[in-house]
Image (cartoon, rainbow, N blue to C red; front, side, top):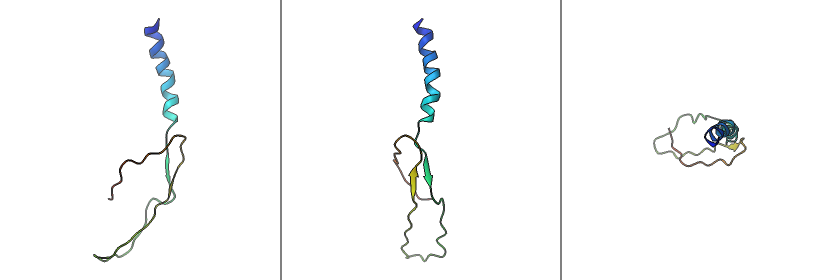
Length: 64
């Protein structure tokens, strides 16, 4: 009985767990910096929020 009950319970629980997730929402997804010189220093802040219902953890950032 347990061999059947455990997989059925897992199948019922997995969709519920997939809805509980962090969702990152950016106010602005791009920015035009215009013409920048080789030695110019620039800075811009991209604001974002967590629109999900779980904590949002940012582990790694890279520039493109």
